[in-house]
Length: 515
Image 1 (cartoon, rainbow, N blue to C red):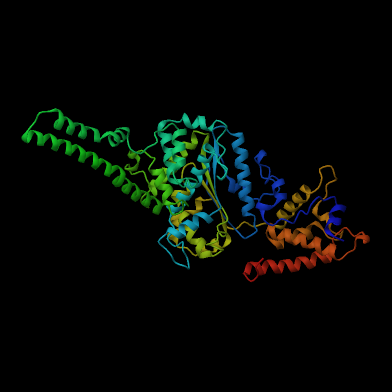
Image 2: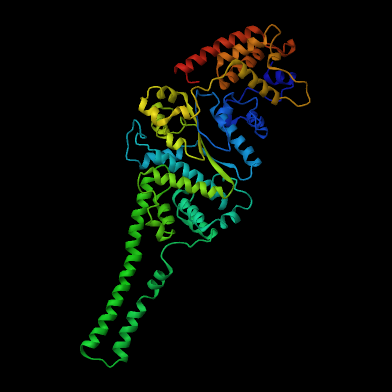
């Protein structure tokens, strides 16, 4: 017998237990990542999901530690689904989602431009402001991509059909704030051209030199030449008076030339130096100094010398940038920001190293940033960081104040929770009009529901529970023929697979088995 015949008998349209990664799991996608339209967790959600989600009208921080396969990525997708449903039902109380889960580009840029070139751990010098810059880059990019859409740009935030009109009607200060954020943090602008496009869309001056300066650069030579010609050819002057007139013309010409040198050389050198400072500080923003130079050149000169640019490691400047972003998105109906952190162990430069993950995440363990008004962090972290956390000093805990952060020390699953989850997946894989069945119905009558629950409990997490049931189905089909008509899995198959899979899970947790 093969699996296709087994599924056909039970009227199962596809294998419910094939998927192991939530991002690529079609069944999980069809389950809708729970039932966000009702505002309640569904059968596919963990029992702690409601605590992690919190009140979306007042975004808060949650920190979750979980094993590989415990459902962290699924929880991230469920958070996004609930935020989407909340935003569809809300008017001016929407939540602005910042998905901080694809860290590869940010960490690669950091490793190239940071001072720490240690091969053992290139992230030892990671700072809180580096994370704030990366978050601002993602958030700003989602806003700008909505206003200036392009085929090669990442997904944009849903700002509404009238987002351009709303942006143009914002107060002048907010339009300038948005232009400043774009000039600093838009990674999709390698030359500064999008700064000019955005300034035009927002009906702001393009920046650069003032109109008076530009006129002087183009026409500044005329007074000196006119004075020289007038004195030399049209006035009958002699001696020191003629010399004084010629000297005056020369002085005017020198002043014009000095203005040319300042505008075309000195100002560019100062601007390049400023762009270099900004690029060196924004170590987690994957954008070249050419893009920063092009954008800064299109900003008003008053902004460049105002002290608003992040040219130091001061976190107050970054907090002010976050405040700017909040004021801007508030015009589009967003009252809060939710930053979702996931897949910390997956970037190429991290490759699951606990010490590197610790260097990356620990700067964020700061009560001031985790308790920012209107900003919430959902940190879905590998279990290795929980082990590192328990080795920290009391001073670290005083700064992080984890007692305020909705801490979940381990994302654990019971057998009953896994049974309900697998039942829900089984239901999704059958036609709506057929008579419903339960997971235990796939086993022989001498196998009770509690037997299946206990076997799933030994797997401890969804990914391994799916592997266990997949093996039960495969072992059964491999040992019976199609004409025997044995459509239920025998107890001895359940017990054998349970023992082997439980051993595999224990070896995996001890680090002596890859998967």
